[in-house]
Image 1 (cartoon, rainbow, N blue to C red):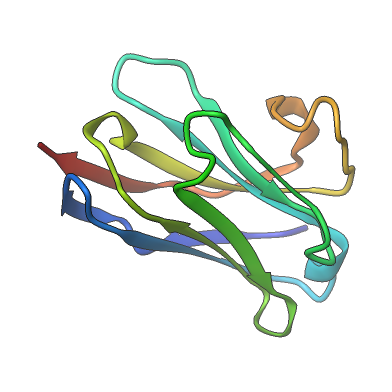
Image 2: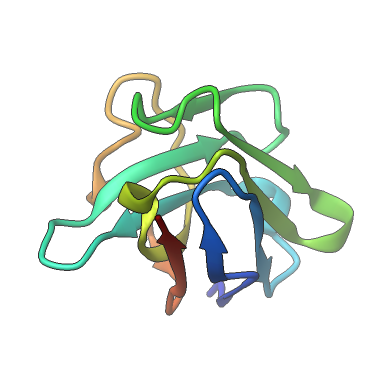
Length: 126
């Protein structure tokens, strides 16, 4: 069982930056692929980024590529999402996820991930 707790959300102006953190419980953190999904008001939840258990590979949604960076610190059981050049369309609840399966083809699908955090709100004002 893995518990995920997100932090770092908040209100930022367009063009600003935020760093989200996700602390995971359990000794097997380094066995899990870790990622982030987001859900904007009135929209479906969507994939943002994922990182392999050893940090050797990542995938990003086209909408965030070049602006967001996912990285992890296995010694701290924590995964991060550095978000730069934030835009109003990035406003959403951001969810941390963990999964035991790594995929280079269906990494954006929600059923791939076994554990989900409660989410942290990110609001970007124009």
